[in-house]
Image 1 (cartoon, rainbow, N blue to C red):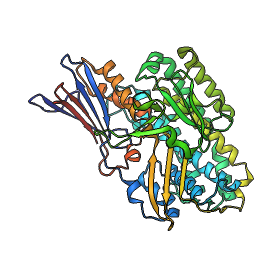
Image 2: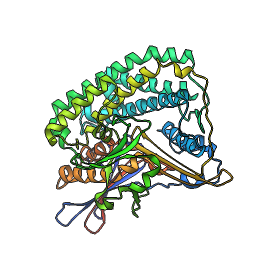
Image 3: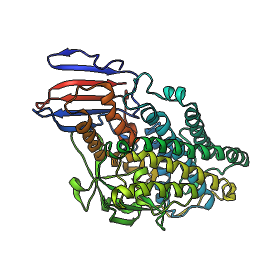
Image 4: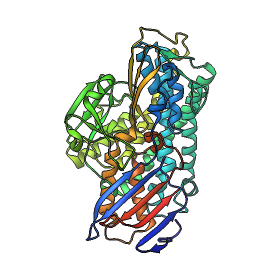
Length: 490
């Protein structure tokens, strides 16, 4: 949007169009409803596109799924390829891969988390953080960031490029790779690829650390904004390793309450449905998962980098572990040692995870198992396979059932954005009540809503398997539900 209110006013309805396209991955809609006094009575984040991937893979052979299901998203296909691959291992009766297969998948996964996190932080979020929430919309872009901070532009391009090189080296191509087969992988890592990646990983790690230093400067300059913007107290869930350390590829489920108490711990993937329920609401295609023991009203929680740092006991790589300790120390001061609840802290946590990814990739690239030739193991077929991993946006479940003819008869996916659905709605309400209520709403103020959404790095097309145009619509309604203002990006 080029001006504050460039829409038409007709019978109390006003339309405002934002240009350029939003920096949210997917198609969403925000509705704010006012009461008679003009206060925020309701804030909803709608995802209104069709979801159907679980349905139309029914009837396909189970070994086709890792290649097919990654087409549901162009942002995080690698995560779905690996999630489906792990689930197909279970159907193939394989509980433990060869060292080469396990490490090839881990290498690909950490490359995916690194490059996708770089997209969110540098390309989508940094214009708000470095240029201001209400900076002119024509400059509040990654191009605007590159003009003022050329080194940030270089980091954005080179870190993402490196992550994509890791994916291509392990899976044959940068998007929609082909690595997983039931029980293993179809290739190892060539020495040529390994040596090229070894050469490039050191500067990538250094750039991740420098990006964290730059972000810390933003936090030091805006401590109250960082601590209070869109802040909500919630429960948290993520994977952790058997020793409680951070593990983004495999492990057991851990959920902690808002005070840091344990809700459940050590839960394997195939028991997720015993602990998590899924609620459907008529105004959104995106489901609302909840912790069964607490019920739909009290059992909502957050996943993703903030949850990963809140739930893990430590990180097994040195630079990321030091960064985690600094992160938790600041939160501990404000929260009495409990979890960190600041929504903008997602960005800080995401940078810590990026450092961990770069360190892990460096370690793997010096592991000779990646050049091994034992790629696949076999087992006795089962009729059900369930997997879990920590995708760039958080915990990802893949659940499949097959018939005796090896055809998929049931599938259920719970992606990270879905877990965060209730939290995104509550963060939007907090921002609306704090920043928008009683004010003449400008484009800059409405961008505050998107800043809150971007902190979660939602992938709406992934969460609902969207079809059609991707855009974000914000509508302000009176107490009768009559629209009084609408804005659309896209």
